[in-house]
Image (cartoon, rainbow, N blue to C red; front, top):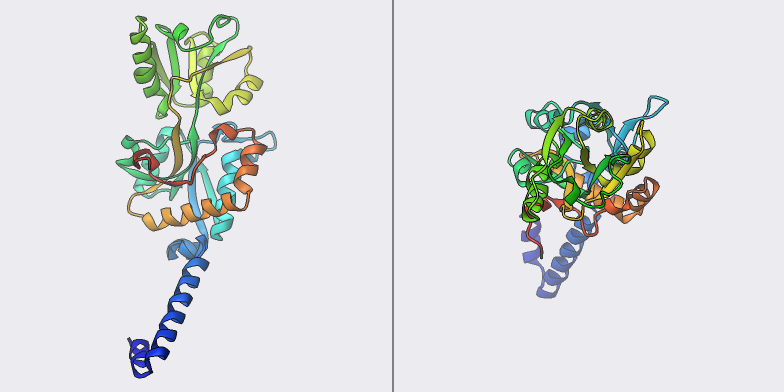
Length: 295
């Protein structure tokens, strides 16, 4: 207000010059504002963001032979944290405990290939950084003739509890089977990715539905040869970092950091290093993209 009064005392041309200078300075300041500047004060002061994941899901995140947590999402959240100027404290729990833990305030954010969908948006929001991709996995000895979803109709499927794939078996796959005049598949849920895969290895179920990006790791670790079955009938949906709905300022800071990571080439390098390019976001990342209308 004082600055405005001083401008009024000058000549007309002087007032215009000062006003233009003020606009230019304000614009420069806004453009210079980075992700770290947007981070809420409580996180700046703490210097830490508490993240929850389920570290049993290669290549997203898992514990390697040296006891270190690694994975493409580990590299991604580390890069985001660096842009924000904070550290990430990571806790690993069962997948279906992550979103309730964020919602309750136990952890600040969750990240583990979590699909952004309308149901989850009722309790949390998402900074979307990639896509959920899907494949079915069967034992080679039982799946020689299986090349798409139709031979899986009427069989016993398996998916990890709390994941998008449970619903994909009972909805999209079931609908496609019904349309083809075939019986719908059933689904058994398991608490961990390892237990889900074990159900197929042991013969308790016929196929697992999970991330297409996990193919290399699943085939490498499987005790018996596993075949990957493409599932083009299943949608590719955005996946994101879950944060509390009342912390939109944190979400904006995370989004800004993610955009900086993309702009400097780190994002592309991480996805290339882990051979998960099909999961890359092919447009600008954003918040709650599952319910944002396409332009």
